[in-house]
Image 1 (cartoon, rainbow, N blue to C red):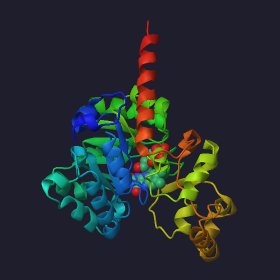
Image 2 (tube, helix red, strand yellow):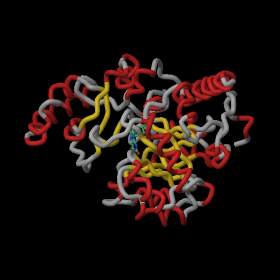
Image 3 (cartoon, rainbow, N blue to C red):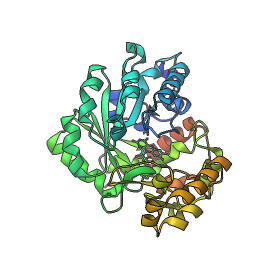
Image 4 (cartoon, rainbow, N blue to C red):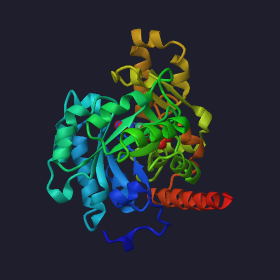
Length: 349
Ligand SMILES: Cc1cc2nc3c(=O)[nH]c(=O)nc-3n(C[C@H](O)[C@H](O)[C@H](O)COP(=O)(O)O)c2cc1C
């Protein structure tokens, strides 16, 4: 892609944009079943790093969506801004989707692979051999040394505000203090490693804040989930537009309902709907006898009824007011962040 085709919004440059050839320091979170090929390609074409949501490592899904992303970026060099993400503890069961993505000819290989929720070290050598950058998402400072041992070029500090999986409230950190603490830690122990903030970054203010806190950029999930290209259900997106930031909750309820055996200490943030409220005070009972609740949940999914099915967004849902094309969201976030940073600079002195 020649840069004349990039959307017309101000460049915002950091170490991340310079190393990865981006126009703005944003990375699409590899959201399982939402960050499909169309969304990843739209983000790459808009000058960000677009990560396909390989999630649980479903080979057929990953093949179809990564191929779609390659196809949609075929005409230009936006392919150099495509990558894929996986849930590490699921790769421990089956890594065929990771191997399939890595096994592409040079011009179709992922620029980066992101691993979250588990030990990245068993996969580091094959990712490095394919020439892809390793991105590791962490929720606590004590997880960082393991990611550096794996050779991570980018560490993502995910706060408990984030949509989807993260650490339960006993163990999670808040983005606003986790990011600067990790920035300081990396400056001492691994100054070349880049840092992304994740959790609650959804507009120009929060992007500018992430940069001010010492991040090289932001990993955005919820805000890009609520775009036209995302594979999330339209009913879930519409509900998100109507939901305020108070309306999400972190718990294991939806994982139990979905029969997902997530290891401790991870749980899941989504909109706190009727079915969640019904079970949130009785989680042990739900674990012991989940059948009736699962039947209710399954019927909700089938009917597209989000008072029973889950809608996966984080606290940033309160900053989401429309379902726009991804490129518009990216351009708005970047232009607003540039403006704020410029204005803030003028406050000094
Ligand atoms: C719908 C959805 C699905 C997600 N799926 C994954 C996933 O498969 N792998 C992963 O590493 N993170 C996943 N995440 C978490 C993101 O990587 C990221 O940490 C989070 O979205 C950042 O917070 P935000 O939602 O406030 O932007 C998901 C998030 C959402 C909203």
